[in-house]
Length: 471
Image (tube, rainbow, N blue to C red; front, side):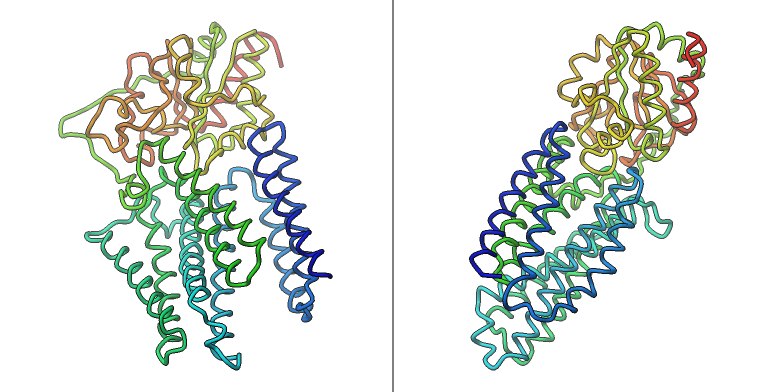
């Protein structure tokens, strides 16, 4: 394919990537955005494959086959596992960038006639950035996926030890220092050994970076890993002299960074606090302090719900784990048939990835105009007759407003405690990922509905249907 045609194809793919991000800003055009992104990627692959310098086609075809099989398998995971799948995608992207940087360095180092002509200062800077970002994204994303999947051999709470921050920063600083030395002397006798050591340090730093982070911070971690993967793609674009990679990586990296900023703002926390704050360590109550929560039955809760005018449902990770979204849709239908105004309060960090609750409720075909962001719904909550909290914990904890000693103090929350009455569906009184008791559970107007979210919500729907004769 002519180089001019390839450049035009790259320009088209870049435009489609930009339109894809723009269209995914709105649920009405989000499907169009996904299709645009897929078309852009297809055009990019075909154009790159058609470049005059590409001759060993079987080396391209052979990896595509297992990759396509793996991609098809990943596409079949349930929506409740989308956070894990997203983390794995970041891991593969980071690994690809790291391997390309490694291959390029050793090729230029040992397989070209004059390495000094290829290993320029700029190229070496790009390679060092590529392998550090790529490999730390790889191991960090694998640990994130394992935590999200709740593997038994991975602690869900932050894994911390004394001096951990200094160990992590020391490992990263050493990798950067070695990279700086290689940039200065790329073809030194010691450079290859230093390059391998950078890879080892980056791989090690990746998992050390995520292990101290608890589940409450996972939405932000996913966004950060997205940014790292994008930045590694930018560096890879400079190494390969591929303009499309630079552009696409910049879009990916910047969108991940912006999303991370939004997530941190939603939790009233800084990047450094997320990375090194060990948010999620279990805190014990003061000696002698004993609180009692009131419980209610689904029958009693259903009788109150059917008398309400405004019901606000607050979904959380517990709804995702129980896969209760379809039962929630049935409950929504039962309530709306009675003329009850039902809204869903969506917290930016509810679940395990940005937009997690939106995706699950969309799967159950909840009307998107019923999903209302935290800032827009809070002023309506004092007029709400009932707030139904399904598996949410820290995002409705009033301690964020009142307890200056709480680790979540200052975090914007959904003001469920301001409603006339609140029902909280939960398996037990165990704390959430922030590791603290939820003051909402002990409030005067709060009643607990203990049990699996899917079963409890289903029972609420049955009770409402039985009371009205609707089946």
